[in-house]
Image 1 (spheres, rainbow, N blue to C red):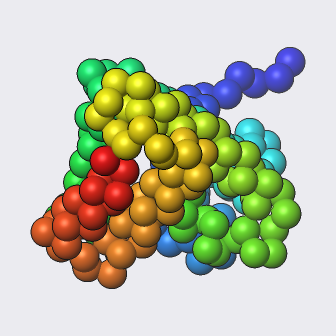
Image 2: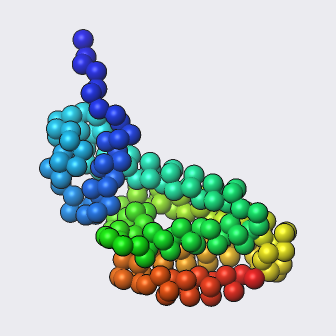
Length: 193
């Protein structure tokens, strides 16, 4: 009779994600993952497969949560512009706050793994398409409610917004101040209104 798992699958993914996020994929060893999760290597292998499999499961979990947060921000605002401002505000807070600035896990992964790992690159491309679709919907709403320029192309503008969001997170890792981030966002909003 097989012994039941004695750990919470999602909790272990969250702890593994934190280790990968802090150190990157290549610099995170199975010993690091064992320490971060409190799960023996053998149990990690049995429960999640190899390191790459654990990483992709953690990445998928992160992307799912990030997309849910984006949709929540979009739904909780009265206008398209307010939704954009809320999304930018969340990224500024994450990118310029005190402590270790880890940036965005998907952006970090794009830089570290996407150039030479087709599976990761395809996951991130799919996620970017979903993210831009949500942002394009926000932009369309802003055009319709008059809070954004009426001659915007929502799809092209969504790509612009995504690029600014990603750039803020990269610059945050380099020490960008909250004032610099706010000035950048003000310029991006000005382009869209």
